[in-house]
Image 1 (cartoon, helix red, strand yellow):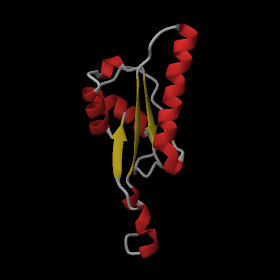
Image 2: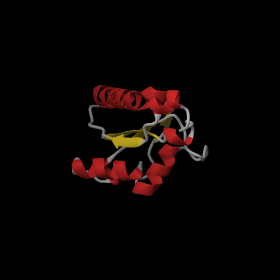
Image 3: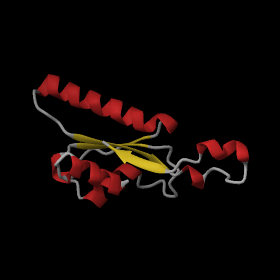
Length: 116
């Protein structure tokens, strides 16, 4: 996830110091429950002390992170009249929790990460 985050920041000509929040949408298939993925991405990309929660909404985690991020940006702009930049990341490693030998479960074997 940190690689996807750094690539998204690079594509936007931004650095970790330019963002004010990170939202990570996931099923939490990671082997570590604590710390969550958001704070780990924050640390790995070198972002400062910013808000970085996990959005554990299952398969809709990435879309939910983007939606929540856009609402945060909009609300801060309307209330404080300033521009806010954030990072939305979605990803999972479903092959860790899905049996690969059961044909019915192969449809959910999609490991990957993206950031915007």
